[in-house]
Amino acid sequence: MPTWQQLRDAKLDEYADAADGWGKVSSRANTDKDRVDNGMFAKVHHTQKGEAATKAGGDIQQLSRNYQYLHTECGLIRTALNGLATELASPQKKLKQALEDAENLRFTVKPDGSVEYPTDSLVLSPGTNTAEHGAPVPLAPGKGEGVGSADANKGKAEDIAERIGDAVREAAEIDGRYAAALRRLKADPGLAVSDETLADAAEDTTAMQRAAGKYADGDQIPHGKSPTENADWWKGLSQEQRDEYATLYPASVGALDGLPATVRDDANRMVLAETRAQTQLELNAIPKPPQQYLPNPGGSYPAVVTNPAYREWEEKYGDRKPELERIKRGIDAVEKRFDSTGKDGLPEAYLLGFDPRTNNGDGRIIVANGNPDTAAHTAVYVPGTGTEIGDIGGDLERANGLWVASHQQSKGADVSAIMWFDYDAPRSAYPTDKGDAFPEAARNQYAEQGAPTLHAFMEGTRASHEGASGSPGHTTIIGHSYGSTLIGEATKAGRIFDGPIADDIVVAGSPGMQVDRAADLGIKGDHVWAMVAEEDNVPTGGSLVGLGDDWVVPTDPEFGGNVMKTDTIGHSGYWDDNSLSLNNQAKVIVGDYEGVILE
Image 1 (cartoon, one colour):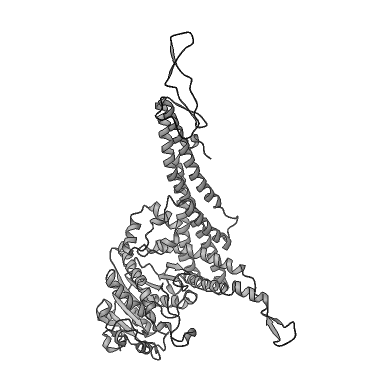
Image 2 (tube, helix red, strand yellow):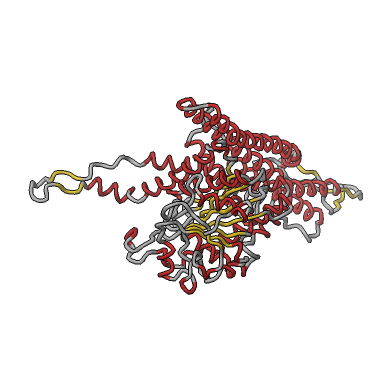
């Protein structure tokens, strides 16, 4: 417990100066991590092949993890020092005021915090008529009872002693909170940041949230606000406050539509790294399953029986292991995209959303190829039925292909292609699929529930682009299969929120968009583009179950949009490399409408 002298003499500006130093180290580590992720991998792809590339890639991944850990831990130290200095300022001010009052009254504050004061009553010296003050009386800190008594000095001294004691006790509580959190911030020797180390960093963040909750209150982060309101909140913070919130609450900051892409990427990568580490540790802790069947000890029929040990293992790990493996596959797919920067000219990637367990377990993954805040043309690809994070790799590849094709036709203008997955997607597409007698994709509830989230993201993309570039830029939203149904429903959300969802809408293999005319999507019909490939039966199935009003699908002539020519086969080939189907989408993305080949 600090003494009142220590509290009085504490130079809080030195804590703040030290915090600035740790903050610079944290920022430098983050910059170096970005340089590793976006520069070194690109050079490896250009200069190395085979085993050399694999070995170099592994080393670069480890270096990136090391910088990620430095960024997190140094940021937490910065937060602790800033929070300590800020919170100690109040009890220090109270103490100094009490000491000043004591000095003005010519009271004496003793080393133990007690206060000596002269009595007001006069006494006669023995054998004389001379009056003198009584001897000083010590007073231990505690609630004063002399206020209002005949001896006014006693009441004043008790009040001062009580204020001193309160200030010291308040400082002790603050010091204890931050000291406990700071003691956690230590790393094992060596240069290899392990899964255990990253998982511990997540626990460090939680501990610092508890310690610094009064300094950087998580409840101040907007919840349920519009992207514009989110952006205004962020703009209203100092850079120090932004750093604190991003360090302490990365999942919350990373999920806020309207914030800059670089901010969301930094926060979400922190969450991704720590989630990956914890997931791998949990998988490693699951023991190998025992033998499932054993010979029947009675020797009778059946010849084998279920092993009780296996049944126990199944009850404990049977559901958990597949869930963890699914999460790990999703994380691996995202990291594969990170590692592909520079390959085929791919730009840096931005992780704009990550949560493995939201949306009824389907998860959230949003990855941008190129910075959407500065791109002249931004495309947002929305996948359809059966999408979940464990199988997100194919959708990430489609967004990669969209970027490559659009970049080739952009005439030097910056392009960003985003893979957006943040809704509870239907799991089954036809009767008996996944065991469902009635397919989930025949229901509109998944689109209705996900529509506000999709529209908020598009509004946030516009807000962050305007914040960085001063203009909204050109946006295209692309829906595959049920993703187009979601887009159609999201245009209705636009009537509730803030304007059209995008400048252009492209749909491929659409079963219906919840409207019967292109003009009902909130933009002019000549900015709505649809395609259906040979042997793609999804539009026919959608028209039969009525996902479009009046059972109309976007490739029907009466819908009123543009029907683009395709050269691919089936429901999943629209993003085949160098295909007309892909290049037509790219033409729309870059605004080359005359170059689009129509049916």
